[in-house]
Amino acid sequence: MLSHPRADVQFALRSMRKTPLFTGTAILSFALGTGANTAIFTLVDRVLLRMLPVKEPERLVAAALAAGYIRASGAASMDPVRVLRYE
Image (cartoon, rainbow, N blue to C red; front, side):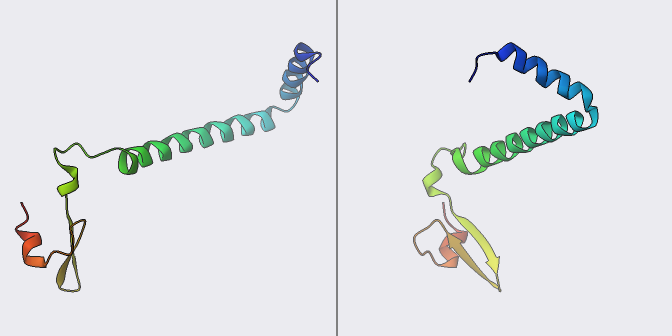
């Protein structure tokens, strides 16, 4: 299967030289795909996979104002008043 790798590389380079538009499009697509993949993985890594840089992350509570009342996630069923005064 890999009996003549040098000849295969030469053939590939010769084919790319014959079709510069296709070669440029393929290289640009590869570069954009690699960049997008890196950007998305970096975002997921920072947001979802790493711990937050705080002392006690298990004590964090997310509070949101929805339909006139506050609901909390992350705390075991706390009422809105306790969420606001959570220390």
